[in-house]
Length: 254
Image (cartoon, rainbow, N blue to C red; front, side, top):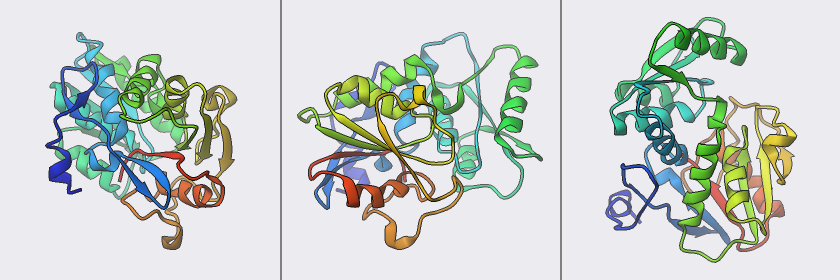
């Protein structure tokens, strides 16, 4: 399916006034893959639209993002969709393509010379403290509104409830949304970068990727569809080795 055909699909989901195309599922190597790489901004654009529109008095949304963090682009799209301002703090230096695309959407990018996560988070918090009308989004979008938006997106899929689900996991927001949507499913997560806590994992059984967060996985390990090389693609080797035929994998971006 071409991307132009995908965006002409009539069905839509979400409690936001912005109507986005429903996720589609394409089978690859016996695995049912949710192809949100076909949506500009990926899966969290859906949830951020719902979250941002839930707070009409907030005119500017602020987020602290690792260089390779996908949420920066999701937020940029959500704020562009809804006519709000997006500000993202990132490590200084060469921009990842996600930051470049966020800039094109009008996102305000603040570079931090010391790019450790705690530093960019402190800079984002400081910015909110000096800019009335702005609000900080928790790391990874870890908020019940966002988790429930993920749940609602999953429940919009035209499928039988899956028995087995796989995701990549950092903050665990998507996984917990899927756990709420499909309480009887066996859930697996591949942890990358962030030291995911027991609370963030929920009931998922997890595996640790051998790659650092900012490392791209080797070409031979990548899935046969567009997938973030520093995020979703790192799950594919685990899925090929361990997943049951017909399991569901949620690919959040390209």
